[in-house]
Amino acid sequence: MEGVALICALRVRASVLVYRLVLVPDVALTTAQIDPLPSRIGVIVRLEATVTDAQRSAVEKAVRALPHAESVAFEDRAAAYERLRKHCRGKGELATQLDPQMTRASLRFQVPLDRDGRGLSEFVKLDGVDVVRLVPVAML
Image (cartoon, rainbow, N blue to C red; front, top):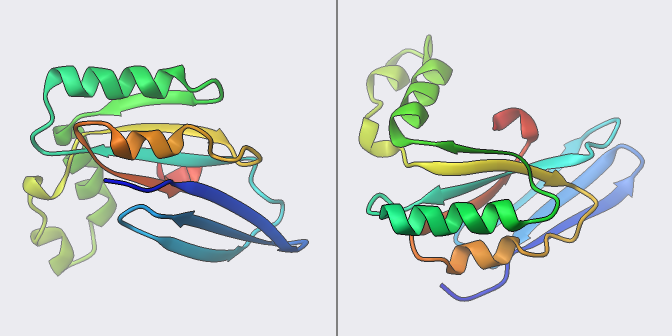
């Protein structure tokens, strides 16, 4: 996969923050009313279903090498499925349609929002990485 992932955080008004992730498979532009503005953003590096132990180890090493990455955690596929099940509990038919094959192992961490995202774009180039997503820290 080619391209560069950029995190752009623009203060439009005092309580509006615009996030933008570009040139990755899931391009997102989200505007939220936030006051105060968050100081950190969550990052989920989702691994491919066929990731090898060596590939996973290389991705984890790259994540831990980021100077501002905090709370780095590996979540295996079973734990991801259990988290999804708990989140969908009480959601009627949605909960019955869940399948363990829907989930993937991932590395989850947070970085300061005031950084320019340097280093995050490299993850999409690593073998074994499916997608990189930026999420609110509460979703980690």
